[in-house]
Amino acid sequence: MKKKFACEVDCAACAAKLEDAIKKVDGVENATVSFITQKLTLEAAEDRFDEILKEVVRVAKKVEPDTVITI
Image 1: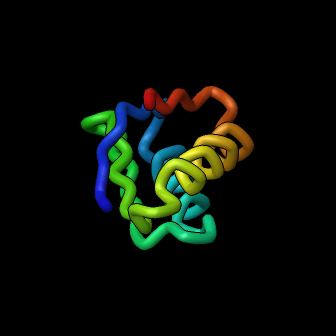
Image 2: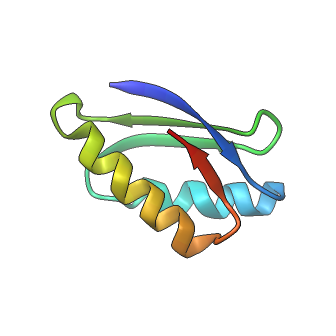
């Protein structure tokens, strides 16, 4: 399943750092974080999507505390 979420990031470097961290979360098939569009595109298994999304939000806050992902 592929979904997009609003994702407030401060700079392109922060977006790249977030993207790398999110891609390492167990169950994430692919992820992109765009500083320009302020969007997170997340691909993960449909049956575990909500669980994976919660972990992605937790990891994002750990890597970049100012990041806001709107679910």
